[in-house]
Amino acid sequence: MENPAAVPAGPIKLMMFDLNWSVHDTPRPYTGPSAPHDWANTDPQAYFDWQVEFGNNAIFLQAYTYGGYAFYPTRLGPTAPGPGRDLLPRLYDLTRSAGLPFWSYFCVGADVAMNNYRNDWVIPGSRQHWSHGFLGPESPWTDLLCARIEEFLSQYPVDWLLFDWFCYGNLTTDYPVQPAWFVEQPFAEIIGRPMPERADQITPAEDLRYKREVLSRQFYRLRDAVRHASPHTRIVFSPPYWGPADPLWVDHPMLNESDGLLAEYSKPETMDWLLEIRRPGQRLVGTPMGCGGTMSVATIKAWVERGCDLSGYVWGTPPTLAPHAASRAQLDIVRQAFGEIA
Image 1 (cartoon, rainbow, N blue to C red):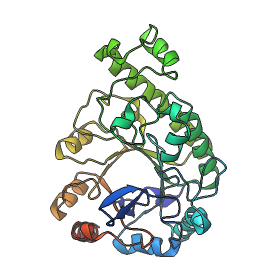
Image 2 (spheres, rainbow, N blue to C red):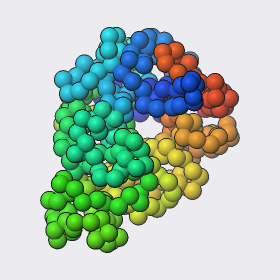
Image 3 (cartoon, helix red, strand yellow):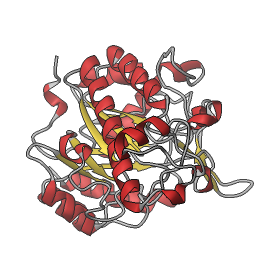
Image 4 (cartoon, rainbow, N blue to C red):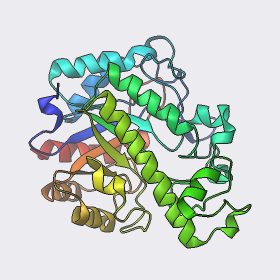
């Protein structure tokens, strides 16, 4: 049954402690994907209380981290050890008891563990930008991701599911299609000729057409997996919007048909464009903190006045559930804004 609190009358206010990552100051400053044991001993009540006390009207926890492990029992991949395996089930129960909506998360573009278990699913050359590379949407990765989604939602029919890093080959949109075994069939179907031997033999028009189509196919598969397992769960996508009206996204099915659009890189011109093109009933979520730069209380409140929701994140050093010192000043600004928004 649909949770009446899933879509509040006012804006969604969500600040999460991002357990995808861990910050380390020694022996050198470093922020990287969290290891399965890093946050495994996080207390569900403490994490719930942290979000409520911040002013959230929704609770968030990753189902699967981008690093490649789950916070719930799964037969389809690694889990956080010990109590970490039950962190999401316990937090889910606390959230339901409180009558709040629950948000969760899968990363579409990468799974650090799977990227290394199945190097042949990684888009060739994509490790030059990020050491883990990016998984091909045409590869068997999408089969596994859809299976994980259905397994998860059959146990925990969350209100909102965020699909992060919806992209091709990099977080920018200019990574060219690379010949690979998993590209052969869809390339012939979409472009109408055999896949060439080299990337420079693919024209810019073919490159754009191909990427738009394979990402459309992946979007529909993810959407249908959610609908099959939990029809009331809403989906929100977070492709890295680097600017307005990027040709990869203009009139794309993901942009037109998802329940929400999360603009992690919430530049004013990008937000203006998304506000202009969003569909009736579609949520637009800005990121007040977590994507670099600074925000002011006035800017955050102006987003809300224009009909936006808010979803920010903060990082920390495991195992202590506390924001890293570098983020505290900005966190205070967001906390003040949350308090002033009804």
